[in-house]
Amino acid sequence: RWTVEMLSECLKFDHGYTASSPFMTQFLHILAEFNPQEQRQFLKFVTGCPRLPPGGLSALNPRFTIVRKNFSSARGDNNGTPPSASVHTPMNELALENLDLPSVMTCANYLKLPPYTSKAVMKEKLLYAMNEGQHSFNLS
Image 1: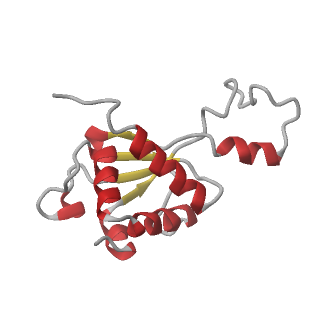
Image 2 (image 1 turned 180 degrees about the vertical axis):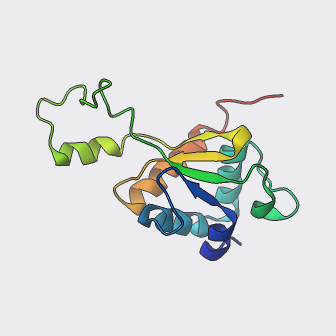
């Protein structure tokens, strides 16, 4: 069973996140709440394999790394202007920020996670990406 403490020790936080970042605290709690099936789906999403190597998460090579993903799909152009927003306000910016999904580089055990506006949104987006991304890219 995954715990927040164990996950915190095994994972590397980089490029905008630290182990004590509020977003990472939420993320670690989400992972600790996953049931075994969700854990396997998460592992397959991040690493391409539904099982851990002998030694568990700490034995992943390269080390499992979580970085901050800057929002992109909510942006309409390179200047960050929303595509259809006639008035750009902090409120519609928050709504746009929740559109992006987490992304991964499986060969590097690298998760790019946006700083969502709530733990519930983070979990929803993570589960969606895990489920929908399961069969989108496979190597044989």
